[in-house]
Length: 64
Image (cartoon, rainbow, N blue to C red; front, top):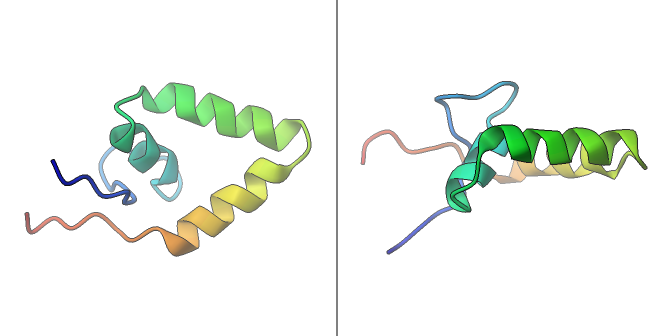
């Protein structure tokens, strides 16, 4: 099984980062979004991580 961490285009809210992370770890995207929201409210590190992930993570390849 060859999994890749990519931004998902289906089910995305902003950039698809949380959707991609949830897909990679087989988790609920809403739960991942809540964790990011909580980390943004308590300390602000979630904003930095989300922006970095949005730039670094590749887009989902639809040709597969």
